[in-house]
Length: 278
Image (tube, rainbow, N blue to C red):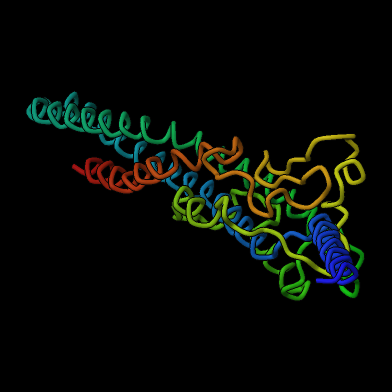
């Protein structure tokens, strides 16, 4: 190969390499599918609060009814001497069953409340973060998106609003989903989260320009999304798996067990209702 041809080839390769590096730090947007996965989790996480509130409300009602029946049997045993022994036996029976059921409910509900609270906390953090990503742009007619434009802005904004809107969690429809399984399926270190529109997203600019620190990276959602020092999402994927992320760890490692345990609450409620009827 002639020296001039070699020089041209090397120059071309150098320009290609420089272009790749420039694209790598070209302020890429967050992929709309990644946002959709996070917002879907947020929606279902908020729904868990409504779920456990409904179960606690039902337990309060049925437990009160069972206690009332027990007290009624005690009173009946005093007023009706000839049925005293039988009434006392029934009162003891109601009390024993009620106590056993409430003890089991206590051991089920108390730890479940902790993980459901963590789920609600993580949902709130996701709502705020995704609100930032969807709002950091000029207008629909501008290509300067911080969420990739594989879909129209109205489409991915609708997906955001469907799951990442901050609401009263008590008014959110109850969700029966297993959040641990949902996280395992949707939020992976191999999940591609980077979209590349033509223009720049200021949230994925170099950290010094976008956020202020002179060095180091910048973490969103406790390190789930990391902006590299020079810009762009570090590794172009979720940086951590949920079980290693402090915001999601409790949900990602313990939710299934509590989710299964909470399914027993309906059976326990039915048991209380059954035992409250002489």
